[in-house]
Length: 267
View 1 (cartoon, rainbow, N blue to C red):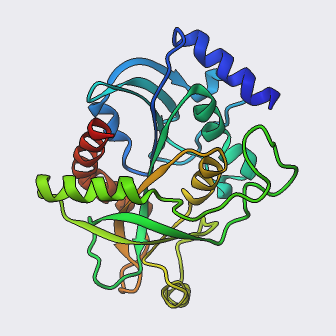
View 2: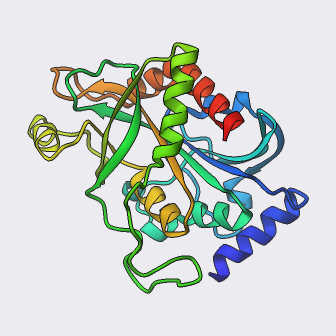
């Protein structure tokens, strides 16, 4: 708690008490959404007390404060992953900080491998639910000031926000897919047998992030909305490649930016 409060105090001082309404976490190749933000403050992670630093290519490592469609937002340009060697409390540290800064909604995005055979590379998948195959970030003593010991994960990806996103996509002619996101540790790309297993247990896309952040946000009562960019199709013969994941993420970034912008406008 002391570390979280210290980070919040430093951020508030550096941003003149900026109070964001929406928190946004930008995944691999999706940092270009920052171009949609009327930026007021930009803080590098290394300059924020107790904040981890991004070590993954494609994650710049900045906290961006500004406005989108007239609403105040804070965006993570780069996130943290369990496979980097961080503890789950470090992976989810920024979500705790953003919640204490005042966000009322959390938007998460990621690059993911498609499991559902009807998906194509470049598709946007609205996350309807998740399957967590990572260590749960709430393991350990519960901080009751943040939330209950046993938080309910029903509607962890807000149905109300998803409905708004669907209406916007229809209006803006943005093709959407819908599905369940499987969160794994990484950092290896999945084997063919693993993809078949994830399909059998109900997954539509798989990745190495997002789920811990959403669990912590829901622990604190923050509604969440999630989008996966399908950057490869796992049940095909193509090989996993991080550079291609970044490329496909950037290609889909413009459509995701339009969706996020209009959704923020209508919240």
